Length: 106
Image 1 (cartoon, rainbow, N blue to C red):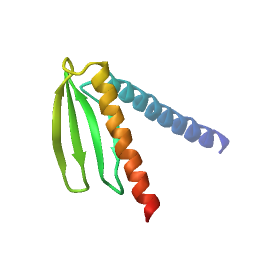
Image 2: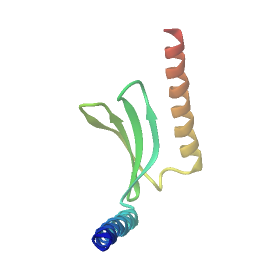
Image 3: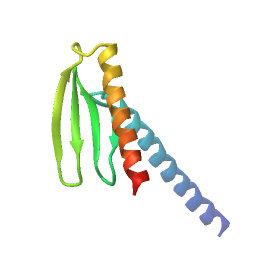
């Protein structure tokens, strides 16, 4: 009887091990494709946000709501130097402080 339980336990461990190995391999395979990366993401209230997404050599500024995605602006990566990134980051920081100020005033 103990031999049957040992066989069941070994089979179960083999299946769980196989699942873990396959999930690890699939995760590695997904991360190799760097078609899109999120440069920045800023939420505005519940389920509203703006995201800067790098696709190839373009950076897309996208507005996100529960029912819609809107392309707000497209930048070429070559057009954006360090100063433009800093400027975009400063504007997002200003929007974030504005949002926090609105919540504090309620």
